Length: 203
Image (cartoon, rainbow, N blue to C red; front, top):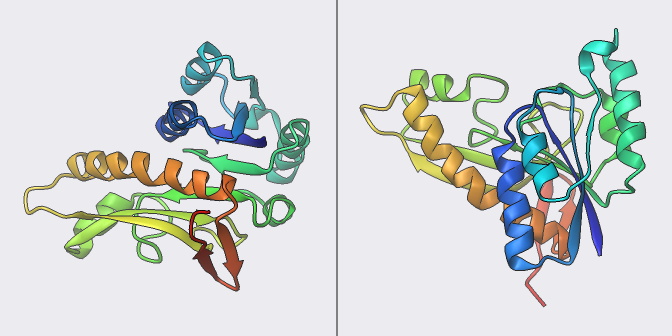
């Protein structure tokens, strides 16, 4: 039985999708904890209602990123996770923190990386006039939004799209590919080969 810790900063809709998939598909894994850097993150209530332990490490209580990351790592490690999942966790993590979980921390980014890293991805996509946008699940590395890619989903950009409309369609696909990618990890199907991810066939 593998152990997963999920980090959120708000609603955590991707966390909800992962929790629902794990329960519906009876994964050989448990969601050991949902941790937030904000006490008002509504996703904490969702997790608690499902009997998942929750914790808050308020980022504003720490004067440096290093101090916050140290406290966060200490809390995460009490759950001995096999995998750490970033699900709308709105913090840039320090290199020592990322390296501590190297090869066992996933993130989802709302663009087809390597295009449009960082924030305001839907605005960037519309401004660039791309015809396809989407979402990417990747392993986390110290290089922001540039880790090895696990899965992607493409969404056509429509002429009349607003940022909000495009974001909504992308989010629908995030809820599909993120649980799938986490399940692949849990099943031992992901193998890092340099900067590429190899997916083993299901046994």
